[in-house]
Image (spheres, rainbow, N blue to C red):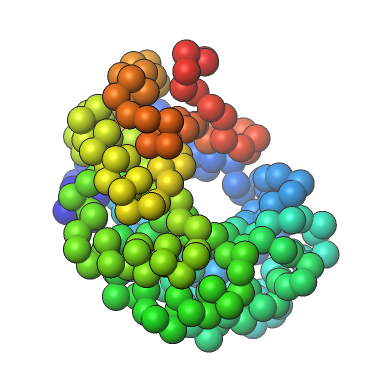
Amino acid sequence: MLTALPDDREVVDDVGDIPDPVGEQALSPLPWVVRKHQDRVLLLLTKRCHVYCRYCFRRDHQPGAAEDPSPSEWAAMFRYARGSGAKEVILSGGDPLAISDTRLFEAIDSLRPDIPVVRIHTRAPITFPQRITARLVSELRARAPVWVLVHANHPVELSPPVRDALSRLVDAGIPVLNQAVLLRGLNDDENVLAELSEELVRLRVFPYYLHHTDAAPGNAAFRVSLDAGKALYERLRKRVSGIALPTYVIDPPDGTGKRVIGYGLP
């Protein structure tokens, strides 16, 4: 509930607010496309989500702005990806599982064979586990290699329906990784993070990243200082095994991409 419901503090300006906290705007060659790296392209399939997480830099959009690409924008974004020379495409949003199966499969199929690896970055298995149907899993398996990156921040999110959804993906041979966000008042505790990582490993989900909170306008209440984050991560490193230890990263506003900040690095 803490991350799902709007809070009055969101409308209070903070000195640390950054309008484009991960530097995407200058790296968007086309609408709905972000290109930070030579080998990867990120495609925003929609601005719709099942839950609009209050700490997310993409949670808000302008009144009247389109929630989905137009037919011409959709064609252009996939044409760009195929001709980009990238080896991976990340399907994001919004949430790419907020669109229909038909449209999702069309997106993946339109990338092949030019793009060998497709990643689906989604919170749906956590926030709407019913979305992970037998048909979805079967069709994703048929389109391998498809990787699914989910987003759980706290062990309480790993309810029985969520566990079932994650197991359906893993049992089908679909690699599943987790990206958590460090959030003040929610998981800025070594016991919480250790339990989350250990539960994910038991579910055969790799704890991939722990993201330092992006300084998006309105999310100041969730931010943890970098010094506090590094100290917390050092304690976590001593608590869990290597396969249960996520990489602690920050995504700076200069658009250069994620940087590792754990293991005593600056």
